[in-house]
Image (cartoon, rainbow, N blue to C red):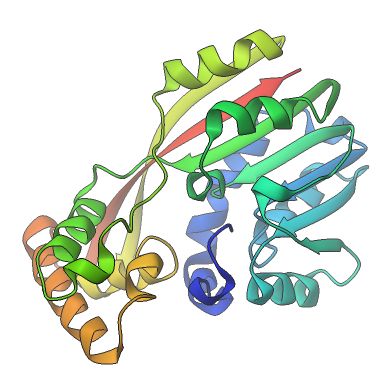
Amino acid sequence: MTTSSAGWQARQYTRFEAERTRPVRDLLNATQAETAHAAVDLGCGPGNSTETLIAYAPKARVIGVDNSDDMIDSARKRLPNVQFELADITAWNGQGPFDLILANASLQWVPGHETLLPSLVGKLSKGGQLAVQMPDNLDEPAHRLMRETAADGPWRDKLKGVERTERYRADRYYALLKPHCERVDVWRTTYHHPLDGGVDAVIEWFKGSGLRPFLAKLDADETAAFLDRYRAGLKAAYTVLDDGTVLLPFPRIFIVATR
């Protein structure tokens, strides 16, 4: 992940590990990972995506990269025989060439996609692949309500400018990558994650991701008040089924670019 180390907690992130790992499997299924000999997991988090990458690329020497001490510590405990590096994706100087660069749910935190993605392609071997998956949910109620709650409260000055890096549409990513690649595949999938525990489960999900930049700037009392207001908005936006489950729609954009 590419927020500050203070803003990420591996334990919170892995509360929904099965749901968070499914997209990386779907992404790797669209690659030629089994032929890779050198691979890197950019934004490896607590190692769940790295573990999946190893399973799909059994011949590869795999490196994991993240800028969170907490995430790297968790990844090293999980996979003690794998090399993990503490680095920000924007400053990562891996020389390559790599047969596979995986960026699963990490580049949404990183600005400058116009230069970053072609730069990553430049680190690939001929025929190597850049495999990217990013949440594409900024227009979903959960994220819209984060922004509205941040702008409508005594904390608004503290939270001014706290927002996610802009994502592009599929056609723009295609146009950006195609001049550098032999083939570019782009697609969008919406998952519907069943979360047990009503809208509180939605809050717990986003405490491990989208809420972190907001909550990191608030004290304990402000956090409680912010979440109370956010919870009220979620109750109006999401249906709780009879068994207490909320189906959380979660669109994601996928890119596999072959050099």
